[in-house]
Image (cartoon, rainbow, N blue to C red):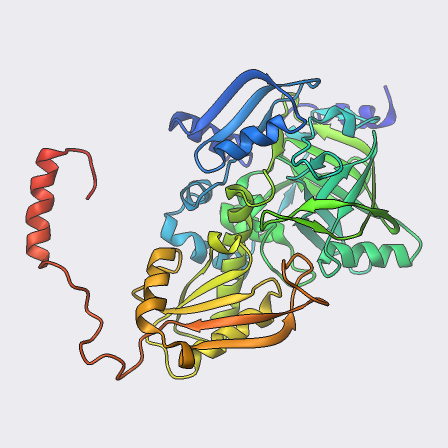
Amino acid sequence: MTPLAERNASRSAPVSVETDQSCRSLLATLAGQGKLLTVDQEIDPVYDLSALLSLTHETFAVRANRIKGYDLPVFGNMLSDLDRIAMAMNVPRENIQSALIDSIRQPIAPVVIDKAPVQEKVFESDVLLRLPVPTFFDKETGPYISAGLMVARDPETGLGNASYARLKVLGPNEALIGIAPNHHLAIMARKAAESGKPLPFAVVLGAHPIIQLAACLYLGLGDDEMHCAGALFKEPVRMARCLTSDILVPAEAEIVLEGHIHADKPIVEGLVSEYHGMYEDYGSGVLATFHTMTSRSDAMFQVIQPGYHAEHIYLGAVPIAASLKAQLARVILNVGEVAVTASGCGRNNVVVQINNPRPGQARRAMAVCWGAVSIIKNVTIVDSDVDPWDIAAVELAKSTRMRADRDILIVNGLPADRSEPQEDGFVVAKTGYDATRKAGDRKEGYDKAQPPAASYDRMRDLLAEIAPGVSF
C-alpha cells in the first residue's frame, strides 16, 4: 500500500449525515420530475457527448452511463434555468437573489470532517487519463474539463478562494489552465511563482449546486466563497483536507484532482469557445500538473456544456446579478431585482429595477454596474412594475418609456474583459438605457389596456371547467 493509500485507508467509509451536500439529490429530483434524460447507449467523448448536451441544454439534464473508453458515467445540463437553481437552493424562484445576497452578508464558516465520501478511492498516477473529458467543438485543439471548481489559498495571506477555470488536458498528468489575468486565482498563482514555487490547488468536480453557485459570486480578494455556501445551506459546508496539501475541498463532491499551477510556464492554447458562443484566441495559458485524484467509489464526472448554452449562461448570470445587487444596494436604497440576461450571454447585459427612481439614479446605477464588473457592457434601468428577467417586458419598456436622444448613454473607452467580443486594447464603448417612466412624458399615463379584474376572475373560473389543470 502506498503512503497516500495507507493514509486514505482510515478515511474510506463515508460519513453519515442528515443533510445531503452532494449533487445527487438534485439529480434524483430531476429524475422524479421526468427532467433527467438517462442515456445507456455508448457515447463518444469526442464531439458526440458535446452534441448530446447541446441538443438537450434547454430541456433535459443528462446522465450518460457509457462513455467510449471509460468507466465513469457523465452528467450535465443540471442548472439550465432559474427554476432548477431555485430548486437546488431550496427557495422560491423570486427569492434566489435575496438568498445569495444574504449569504454574502451572513457567511457561515465550513467544518472539516474525516472519512469524506470524495476520498473513498485514491489514484496516484495517470489521473487525467481516467476521466472521460470531452472534446467539445471542432476548432478547439483538445479535450477540456469544463466543470472544474478551482480551490486554492493565497500564498501570502492563507485566505481561501474558489472559482471556475477551464483545463485543457495535455497528457496523463498535465493540463493547460486558462485563467483571466485579473482573476483571484491568477493573482495567487503569480504570487507563488514570484517566490519560486508552484501554487497548490485542487479541482473539484460534481459539488452540490449551492457550492457551484457560491464559487461564481464576485467577492473581494480574501473573501471565501465556501462561507457563502454555508449560509445558503444554513449549515457549515462539510470539507475534507486534501491528501497532499492543506487545501480544503467539499467532502461530498464526486471527484477531486490535487495538483499545482505553474504560472511561470506559459503554454499556447489556440482557439477556445467562450460564453458568447464564438471562439477566442487568448494566446497562452499556464501549466497545471496533477499527482493525485480522489473520488467516490461510484463517482460521476460532471460536464458543463461551454459556449452559449443554458447551464454555462445561468451559472454565471445568477451569481453576477446577486453580486451587482449587493453593490448597488449600498448606494441606491430603492434598487429592486437585478438581472443578467441570457440574451446578453449571461455576462454582458444587465437590467436593474429601481422603485420610483429619482432624477439621476438611472445613470448612477449604470456607473455602479460598469465599475463593479468589467465584463458588463449594456445596462438597462426599468421601473418596479417591469420584471428584469422578462426580456419581452424589458423591450416593451424600452419601446414605450424611452426617448433615444434623452435616455441612451454611450460611454467610450471603458474597461472590458478579454472575453468581450468587440474589445480593442481591453476597452470598449458601453451603452446605458434609461427605460423608466418620466413625469410629463404621457398625458394618457402608462395604465395597461385590459378588461376589468372581475371579468378576468369569471373567465378563469370558466376556463378551469373547460380545461382543468391548465393555468391561465
